Length: 345
Image (cartoon, rainbow, N blue to C red; front, side):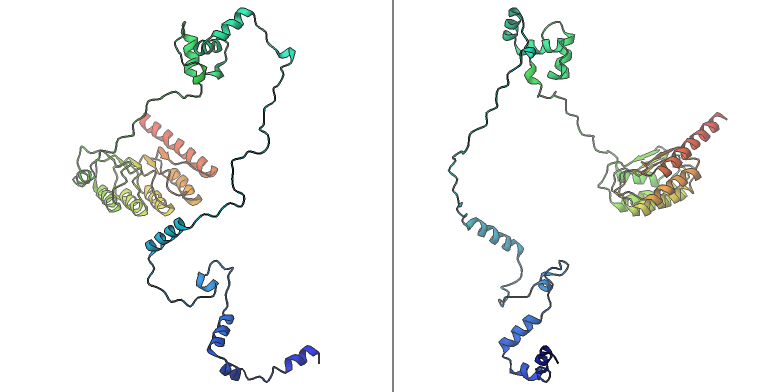
């Protein structure tokens, strides 16, 4: 038996219970503290399970985040800044860099006649701008200065070459006016099947509730006069897309549908595409620029829908895959050719 085994033999018959009964409360607390299993490197665990509790202070009350932030800010303002180990005196060390003068070789030196040198020395900036334009040095001035100097017989642009860094002033373009459509009135007109209502344009109206959009789609099921239905940038999601799909299965008079720039996912787009297969009157469909890319399966379904629906002659979507893009292009070209032959006959 080795010496290490002999050393362990004396601990074989030790009574652990007796030792625990003889420990004081402080020693038991220290033992419990040492036996706690902690993993300080595991960032997925909360702080209480990554580090042992080393304080015995009782909580002073419930957490008040606003009071805590005010206390930390007040404490930071009251704390004095530490003095620099080496105080800044403003003294500059070393010698400043001086660009050495480059001597121009004799073969590169340009000499002019005395009359020309005197004329150039007394020329104003506007005159120098005209001279540069005549010599074709258009990079020294803006386009407006260049063409003013070329086209006019006299100096009309007095800004000179120093105005190169100044951009041309353009007239501000006003923002596009808000959509004037009255949603409630439009809904009533759709429900009443108003003959004068042939286009419903709700573009860029982001304050319309999803329930209102669904109600509009439900009203469109029995409408026979609306030819164009546009919901661009209305924050529509999958519930609205499902309502649009149900509308397409029953409405046989709609010709143009635009649901671009919304939050419709791949499942919502797939529902609309499957509904278009059951509609024979829709000729234009636009569904580009959704919040997320719909995926390869949706793009393949788009190409298959266009091949299956000869009535679609205009389709708005930017394909990311070459395969469905080529299939969609061929299908749209075929559909337009069929439409042309039908009109010709």
